[in-house]
Image 1 (cartoon, rainbow, N blue to C red):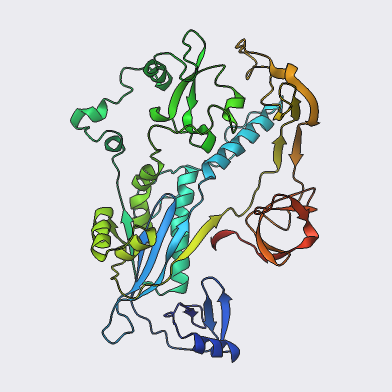
Image 2: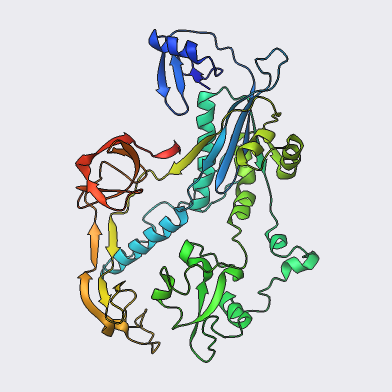
Length: 451
């Protein structure tokens, strides 16, 4: 499918007449404005005749399904035709990057001994201008980022297709009922933490004040996030467990440790919370129609379609089982890494087995200055130092960024990173780095990119 823009940039109906498009480009009657999806712009005046197109959006926390369907096709019997379909893979690391930024800022500011107090030195991000159609409200940065991505992507589709109607699937999830299907009435006000002073007290009581790894009880206890190793740090009780101070140490958090790879009893409810939070905001901002998941499911089963995001969007748009199009897959990629400071831990040879370990693993047993857990001092096992710890300050922006595509020895590879002050490049598919001069740029990938 080739998407067409008029001379003044207005979207026209797409075409499958590839031969005609080829001749128009050759004769100078059109020019290419986008390779993926392939879009051309006419260089001569033409009437703006278009047909009604309905865009169906399957909104979500991790993925966006989209499908554009014409109200009346070009066939003699007027069958509906799909002109655009696909999925968008959204970023899932925004929350972790915000926590990392906060950590670096806190460390940096705590080192300024005589820093003046600054409380009202910037405009609060919560004082945002209310949008049309709903009351003023504040959203967490990670949630607002996903909401803005939905809106930005829909605006992108409207630039290449003459969309006349938008239909979005919304949903409201009962998170209490997801955890307990039999809950009803006043039980909603009597949660599992009822009569407990705080969450930590409840977790210790639930686990009988016993370490869930070694089984000891008469020792100092701490509460651990089970999904910490994969970035799941939500404070729901099913994601928390009681550990003693000896089991809750840095080496067990690393890959291969006892705490790495543990899975919570219940999956996180981020997706359900996100949909319940932004459902009406999305509808009101776009001023569009909406539908519900159970309606989409019944249509999909009736059409005998697989459970995919673009198939759901096709049903949302009111499509039928004729004239489908090959789906396009988008991936949202980080535009810029603004973190200028990185810390790299020292590495030593462990005298017990000769393996190379970080200083974080061979430490003295104290994680804070005001607590002494009487744990074993592992510093005595530090042998020869392989590399010393250092703070790396990035002083320049490199030509290649992660997720960019390059050509190396005639093959296409994905950039993983740059090191040696920009002299060498690391490719994701290969195990070693190469000189920067040996690769050629193929595609710079930022924002919403087609995979």
